[in-house]
Image 1: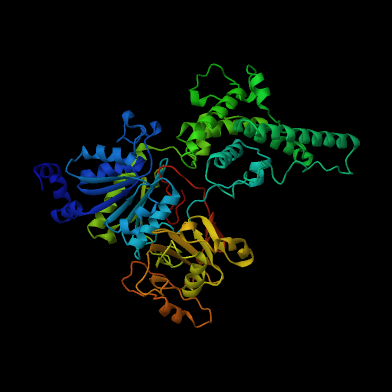
Image 2 (image 1 turned 90 degrees about the horizontal axis):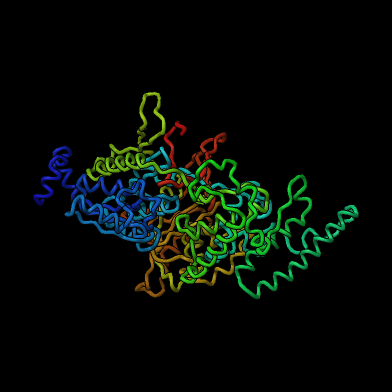
Length: 639
């Protein structure tokens, strides 16, 4: 230990004991996330004495981060969070060995092989998808994880260890609020409906190709077209028939206008299509608007010709109130100009690849704010400020610096116990906004046991070694999923995308069969979820790409315990032998064969998760994305 270290850590060494302190100094630590919690956490672990640290973060620094992420300053805006955090933390201890990674933790390079090098993983993430992914990776790598999250004044720390505790996915996590597609497309009644629609439009114009985008069928209405709603109904009065005929003629004329605009500048055509043609089509559905105000189609020329006309819903009721620019509601004309300018900025950005909407990128937010307000105006709804749209579009929960500091401190306390092999002393801790009857804000709970019905840790993760570049999905389905795993009616998912589903809709997925695994996103260190509801069976498969095996007849190798659901064929042992199924007691993954006789059944779907603890109780929640969101609740305690 250097003189510098001796002086700095004398107190810490005495407080923890020399033996434990040396374990801390020797431990390899992976910190995932360098945001609100991550900044506090990195500072803490360096001051405690951790020396060998790596940090992963995808984001760059934004002005909005500076009020709580104290490792960053104005001159750092636009730079990598992980790299700047490393440089800042080294000022606390220049002797520390810290390596930064600017990248997505969900990418293959940060898979089980990478994570397996560390003694502990400390999570400081801000979204559920990444937290679920890290949970699966640490289980596959058999590395302890200290998971954390905050949302406003609430916070939570959970210790996860394979086989010893429940994992992050043993309980259902909050699901995103869902709005009916027909409401979003055809009949918005709230500003949030317009915001969701604007984000869909952004994805349609600038994002990756998504056949499932509700606006992707070329129509913003629900089951409407140029002829929809315009067929003459004999039950109508003569006046109503004349009105419908007039609408039909207007649609026919507009179709010609749209065709002419399509020959010219794309932005003008887009504006006319979504704010005039589609709205005109919707307004033809008379029954939809009974008792309501009809939507008002907009044209670019009419808006710009009335430059000085104020927008009623954009006019402040109290002119004496001084508002910041982001708190001001734009006029109709301002929304139009901002929309056109943002499209000009986004179009060249897309040339480098599809865009993912980001609330902190100005053209992204401007596009959604302007488009949402134009749609709100059309449907006679109150328009909103850029600040309000950002809050709604980004599902923003206020981030409290003090909460981050408390949770970061608790993470370190649990990490010290794990490194010191005092796992029995670890526990989950919940931070509340208001004191409980005993006057405390923190509630400690024992770590829950591994749940036998958890499809991630209870069912196990199986390692599949296979050539992902040459193997066809049809072979994976036949030889691995149906052959060795004995699935009868499997549903196969990569992330939240269903790539194959059995049953009545199986023919809809036949086009996937000839594709190679890599073409479907099944690549080295990716995860594939396979479920068979007919057998109450679900497993997670960790993919390891191999170029081939010594025996050329071997297509793949499975490492772990294959679930043996009864099929009555008696062929599973032969298939296992033929394809070299390895049942290794020391394998890094293990799978259970079936659900225990338990009333606790976890129902899994790609978009919604429900736990039925008793016939009379269901738990669901709304997704929170603050600095991570305290998604779990302690037993018998409501937040």
